[in-house]
Length: 102
Image (cartoon, rainbow, N blue to C red; front, side):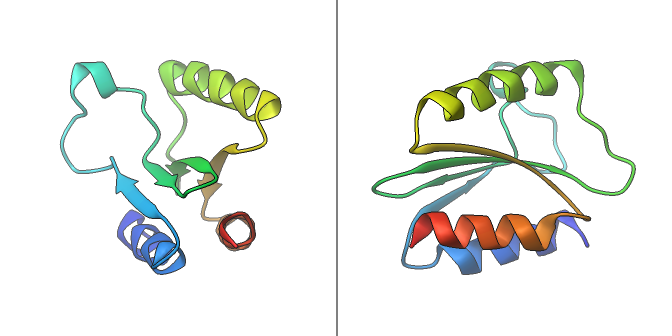
């Protein structure tokens, strides 16, 4: 599974339901957006943040900190969701996102 395949799957899930913003690329993120998750999905009722880690890729310290903040925000707001998508849990995350966007 590649990041491109994940992006394409997320696009298919979001079609006609939400907007998908993709921040993962082969270039470094601008300084102000360095730890922003790879994908953000915005619907009329929910916002979903998705960090993608495949293969041996691991979270950096900044991504861990951002993830903790987003997780706490999600715990306090039912319309905010945060996922770390891996090649091992991708199917389950796709199902969760589809359910959220219904």
